[in-house]
Length: 480
Image 1 (cartoon, rainbow, N blue to C red):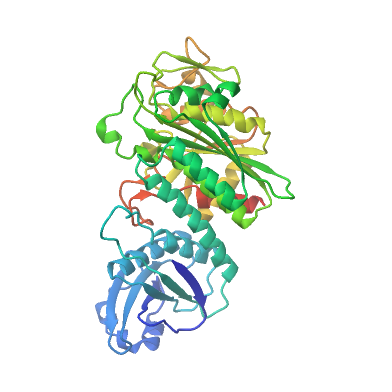
Image 2: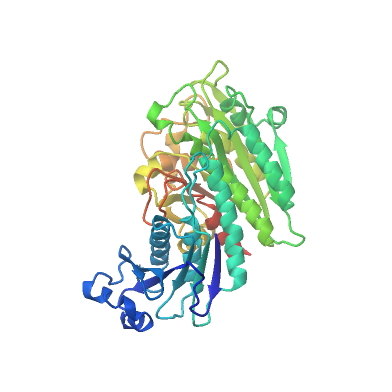
């Protein structure tokens, strides 16, 4: 979808007109501009609440008009809701071209307009490649802002670049598990590296054995595809900071020998959402030419039962010599992430940020609109929370009490991977902290936000969200 900025009201042929109605603003300006719509004033249905909408056809202009409640003027959450409602109405009315006409004319902040543009893009997405009858998408939107806008054409181009990578991440997560395996993701990363001038290193079974990356080897032992650790690097000519990103890439999680119940497997193709986000972020960083060295690590494996499967009771010895008792093979994400975090730490970055669909407990705690943020470094923590508020990929800070450290220890090894007796999201975060040394580290548990089982207040479609791409690009841009 193409979004363009205009400073006058000249809708294209066959374009629908969307008029945001803010709380507390008089409707007289709308009726003055479009007298034929004044009859709507009699109904008193539009007062500006985010849930409101009125659709009508103007015989005078021969065009569809949509009056949409826009909530509080300048509110970033309400900008997201406005975009979601607008795109839902446009798709329901099979509109391919639309004009969003702001009356009164503004001004509107840069953050408000960026959120509006992002969520217009996000809500135009549907994964329908396996449907014979496709949903009609919106092709073009004009934003009419009569006063000088805080959004430039370069801003719109940058948002398009970011949204393309969000779409890539969503497509990878939504794709069927028969097509997304460690082997196919190696190829996807390789193609992206070539297109975006990124450096790629691929570690498969032989290299994993040589490096002592035994978590990946154990988890992936029973799959027909050998596990992999991928590193994708953006190295600009000049930089002062190095950021390592780590993503969990379990391409399908059957639970291993601790087999999941059938209905718990339905969405397990989404267990590689962290790795997909890392790919989207690196592609975007390269396209925007951010002056930061960014190294992405994607730990890839399938967690399957079988005759070579690792077993409860096994002990894994990691490259940093720490040992982990396997209590439950369905707590596999932390086992492969430990390998990736060890490798990331060896690069001596200024910080490590890791994304993973790690625990079901975080969904119980925070639902589908907030990801859990586990971070002890105040500066990194504050930067991520600010980026989250700016872009709408929301985080909630969770504690990491040292008193819980004893819960993750084993009687026969240094650590255990499950059976933590409550607070499992927090204790999984403590487990990951064991593998980063003293480097500032943030763990983002995106299990609830990466894949929606039903629409939420600002995303109108279930399935993959691409969570993490916009968030970390916002953070890295602020860092730069």
